[in-house]
Image (cartoon, rainbow, N blue to C red; front, side):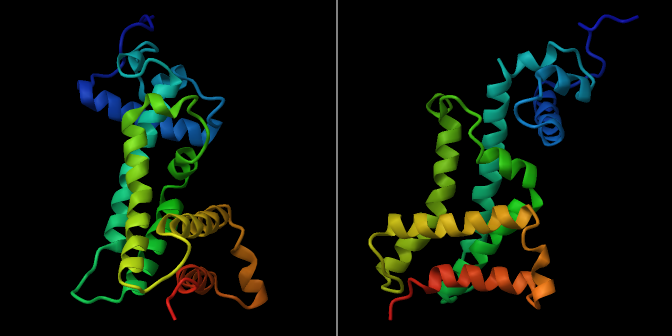
Length: 210
């Protein structure tokens, strides 16, 4: 019988790290953040139980790396949603598209989305790359709100406070959506997509400068 210390599959150094992250997300989705182990991930990938330690000192380092992966993808989706598609495109339509990018990311990457916003890192200050990219993600929203203030399209106490209010609203909608809480809307004669669309619009329209 082969010893557990020998890898069961050949991996390039970088490929192994990515394979461990892929497997980690899957194992976490099945077992939960608290119950998974690096040994579980190694078994899933088909490598020795010591192989993950070449890249991650412990579970928390792997979770932080998954957080970086998630927030990088999330930031890019938000930027794509916010970007103007033609000169003079309506500010509020761009904002709506960014809101839908937020919702769709949560729906498409639900396991990653839950992990990104779970309190699983004991001291986030240790992981500079995670702090940076998560801040950049919120920065997309904050910059969009700041542009609205500068162009006198929206109003409020401050760009930061308005951005936080909108974030709280869209984030709440996202969590409720991926948990299936809106699935019963059709029984009340409401369309789920239309409800979410109106909800996002209301979050920003409420701040429209009259």
